Image 1 (spheres, rainbow, N blue to C red):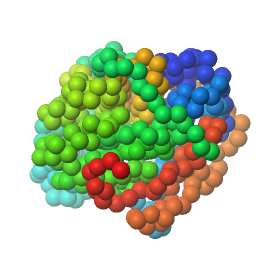
Image 2 (tube, rainbow, N blue to C red):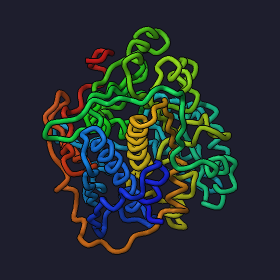
Image 3 (cartoon, one colour):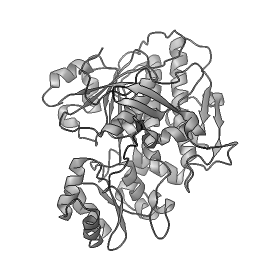
Image 4 (cartoon, one colour):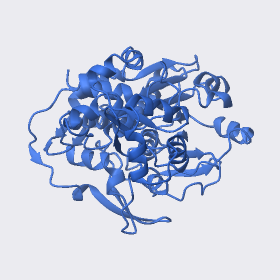
Length: 454
């Protein structure tokens, strides 16, 4: 089964619509040992098809608009955080302590981009913020010992595993039991009545309100895509946990950004929820439950809601509650071993687990909205980076040669003035006949908007 056919099937889509998808394959795009190009193409293509399907439903079109996938646009978008420039400045994607380290028996990878994660890593190692000191401290520990010690301290470190070693892990067993896209009903609300669309640009999500409770990359990529398609996306962050400015600039296109303490400002959140159509969460499974924000609790207060969740390791299993990032999931699941050499681990040519899962999450939301318009019901959708990783390692078919070359990202980059400065950024890769070519607004400063719907 081709990658896009599998992804579309997992989303519950009509296989007949796949005949309306065309691809420009480019040699050299997202080149690596694993078929990252095919995974990326499938995720973006499935998202574009879900958008076209919903747009046709709302606009009363006799046929779903044709979808166009270009490997150049996809590869550029999957590197969006690397291509970003703010007034000509190149952002730092990974902090100095976010890297591979040799241990006494192998390798471990840490993630220390956020100050609180960096502080916890240094605290458990008992070292200053110095690369040589951290290197020496980790060299004295085994990989698994380092992994557990840093995790127990609230930091982020994962031991390098081969695919075979990961397959024997209990978390891998749990992840394999789940579909790529978990889909379910939350209630029996009546069919959603979506206002018809008109105008020169087909915006499938126009008029829909999305509460964005996500951080880092996969979740923000999903909500950035929903914003592209016309949704009113309001991102909410706790005031005491600032986002990395460049990361926010990259994933904030089309959205408004507000600060809200979910514990202290419950009434404000309930007012937002009362008018929301979709809630997207990207925190660890269970982390928001203490605020009454489980999918079931949200749907009880707002019948007919679509709740979308994304996590690193999945919602079940011994690692369900662990923090995780794309780079760490690559290390645990064997991807880093496959992409590396006997001398040193490697990495995918892009953070493809984050980006790919983000586009699939947006696609799942769009498909849930389409299904609701026929037979109602609140919906839940759930994805995990580890499940996407398993698909990449075991199930994505490698494609043939490209019909053109990927000679660089320039054709798919543009510049936009914003309150953050002049932004050079990737164009959206989601493309279908009549659809939008870009976002209605650029990224705005983190936390600069009021926590209310406009």
